[in-house]
Image (spheres, rainbow over the protein chains, first blue to last red):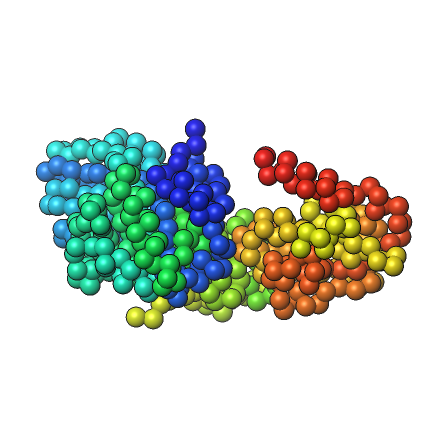
Length: 362
Length: 131
């Protein structure tokens, strides 16, 4: 059965085009991808991300357990901090990429991809040990993201906490309007912004508050399509496209979430081995220098040799370029390396470029 | 807008053709441009190329999708809308006017009668939308 978020009716009233996305009926776009994308870059955008999953880990051994199942160093998380991390299989590949919130000394919240929620929960439960329990809280939270340079200004009038004191990748427990919420300075767009976790019944009120206050300032409701182009410009990996259970943390070029010195964790051995032996391929960003858009699944060539497959590709609305991500053999991953992509039967030139493609000015 | 294309004929692939002096002006419908969303590239057919009814003559890329353009008629490409190269969003803004794609000579004017008229096309789109 297709699931609906608490904001389903609101999306339809706003004229969103709805699609099925990993079992959820979600808005793919409202006014148009380019308009929504550029609103987030220039002003603000409002996203319904209630389909994301939330898994609570709590108990005396919660920290030790989170350390065991994730590759980043959760001991660095003081209460109120958030960390990008991953659940890793013993072979070093991704169960999922996740956000880890330290709620209290003995409680963590993992924000996981919608498509992976059940798989992750199952994986976590199968590895429980010590004095710790895991609870899937996904149905108890809605999640609204407000992203863009005006996000703080718009949100601040509804919040009892001082948002300026919430640094990047930190969160506060507070109220948005009359509703209890976790207000987290995180996002998936490359912009400053907040993700608000609150009860499903609070979601329509919070959405409407922000939408009404933000619209005169240029805020737009933004759908999955803009979310995808924004995250790609910021080179944020998408599970199922850029990373999955066949790609390792090292190949995905996510060294910054890999903390070998923290001690043992699931996947460590395989990743250590891969580190010692060296990886054979790596995820890199490219620009299409010829005409056309290289999309997910298109094949890349060096001469007659097939060298890789585009994992994500789009027209980047802010940069006005055709960009993408691809796994290439290591010797081809240096910035400036040229290759060809088969765009619907035509070989088109592409070049490896530095990432992120887009970085906001501080 | 509706008045403007009452005499147009339509394909199941959402192209339109308007006949003027033995020549068919070809474009995509408003429904098609809405389905595609923001259009960012258009690949036009070459002038002088012989095209067949129902065969691919170019493509349209939007941010999220790509679609082939199929010729609604058989004939020779006489002219293409070069403005689409620098302003592909003309297809979003004015699909029945400034967003025209190509002008094609009509090798067989009788082909036109096999295409849908506006009323049939509107019914067809309604059915599509339900799917």
